[in-house]
Amino acid sequence: MIDAHLHVWDRARSRYAWLDGAPEPLRADHSLAQAFEALTGAGVEQAVLVQADETLAETDYLLELVAADPRLAGAVCYLPLEDPETVAAQLPVLTATPDFVGIRNLTHDRSDPDWILGTDQRRSLALIEEAGVPLDYVSVLPRHLENLIRLARDHPGLPFVLDHLGKPPVGLDGDYRRWQDQLAELGSLANVVAKVSGIYRADGAAVSAQEMDAVLATALAVFSADRLMIGSDWPMCTVSGGTEVTMNVLTAAVDRLPPEQAQALRADTASRVYGLDRAAPQDNR
Image (cartoon, rainbow, N blue to C red; front, side, top):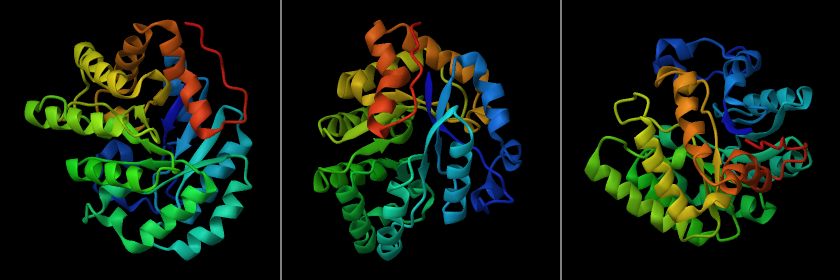
């Protein structure tokens, strides 16, 4: 299985200022060795590292890790979308690096939910679109999803990867129905794929098997299996039910699908979307 959404951090390599307000267990460094130890039981054989800080220093750190470890299939890295000149300078360097597979910003942590629509940000998106690089997009508000719908229509050549299915508000019925409607709009846009990762209840607890089945059924109905991939969201999952519980619920839901759909979620979609060069593991469960 390819874990399409794995974080690690070392606060000696980057600031990770958002950790100052995070739950105490997350404030410690989280290493690659710890990650694979925690995820071995879930069948994770390879992983995509995903940006967790808005510094070029963290970009260097993630690429160093991928280059040194064959269990890592690639890294989704940070570039400052508000600075298109830096994006223009850095993109050729990164795209020439085989371990670089995508770009992400912490869009959801910004006080302005419309930050991504800024003039400079749109110039950067045009550059990324021209380069054909996937952009991971983090959403925690309905407004974030509205903006993704707009961006995906305005940039049809840019592959967008919706992290965590846009955070379905499990347990909040009215908000959940709105999420379903917005996800259906995104599903109609061919340049959007999504990660089934980081799915927790609105109160932060782990979802039940029935809740995960319902979320996955909605995602399959609007995207189909070949536009979905699964990820652990480690170590964030450690404070939302625990790694073993959250991964057991996720993988059990995927294993109830027909084998060809399960294989798409487990490895094939991530391999195709991110253009992973390393041999993807074949999971025949």
